[in-house]
Image (cartoon, rainbow, N blue to C red; front, side, top):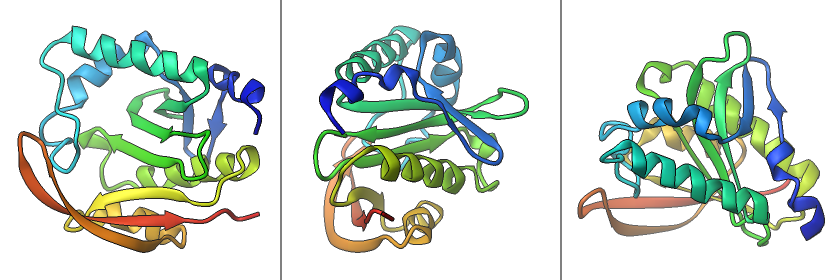
Length: 181
């Protein structure tokens, strides 16, 4: 994909059976602030926002990267009700090795929404980007999250330890997910 094409990321809409993925916006700041909790971020590097201005800064920064074509940051909505379910991103999309990131609010866990959202974003990626593989790092003990890249044929490429969430050390497995072209 060319840089010119990438600069239209603000217009991306991705549909799946139950979900709609749309670019992040300030419209979702209250949802993100409320739902991005310490329980949700247990296995993630970012920490929950301390106040709404932290969430607003995240959204502003995400919009800048959408506009410059470097990251695709989307919110996950229920297709029927438009209920906010979480966030999903494809980062460093101009590289040969972009990276997936996703989180769902607690009440959305256990419904297969994560797998469905990542599968839909992977399909969009296969159609729109020229990449070698997508990275999907996950804490090894986070079995539900590990099942997502495994369901897409992802293979563990490397393992490493990293401090996250206030200095907690976790063992990560990094999957590589290849294009279906």
